[in-house]
Length: 290
Image (spheres, rainbow, N blue to C red):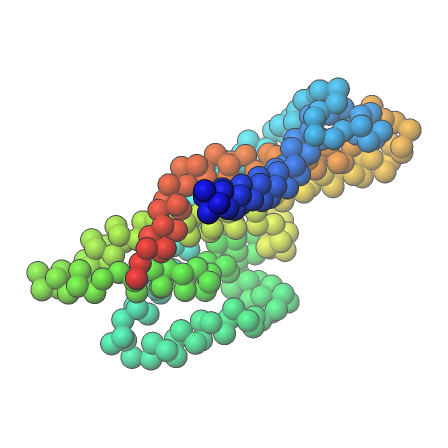
């Protein structure tokens, strides 16, 4: 009984710890929701905690009142999907050959790729490169410069390497070439890993902001994050002009920031449950491989 009780206390401690960590992650999210749904006066008087005070949807109306917002939302979705497809294509094409011991110079190529994780050209050279390639004010400036993550490449390479070689040997005996083995054998078995990395790439592009700020001046090419940044900046300027005495004349920046965070976060929250089963499957597969 004492041993059983000891395990029960250990389990209870783990549960309490997980609940505490979950609450720590959830509280800021609830606070942002409360800010975005509270009135100006309640926010200025600091009455808002984890529940909206003087419930209002004016902040969301301010964001959605911009006629270009729906277009920007659709454009950002297309941009994210295109970026994810390009990144996964390049990552797969680089990771699969690096798993082959017969590839000459495999260690050299892998070393060159890893070096880029620690050293980069810097901001100014990157800007000059994009400019000299004629990609300024182009969708390609948001797609190509960060088209492959070496970290994700190493993860996918490791997953490919963990697959049994006997499967590829059997397919090769049956007359299947390398491309056929990749498409028919390796990729179907790697769906959990591919779905997980696709989610990483999609989140990275969806939250991308700095590259668009540097390379894009055409409003039709603004991604969601840059558009929301401009709305917040414009409202902050209005805040300065109005002064602190005009509480009802504008949406306070804190409320607008919170609504912008929610507006940008909801699409990812909608997509994630669709990929969650693959994410969990990928984690479990890696845990049981010997």
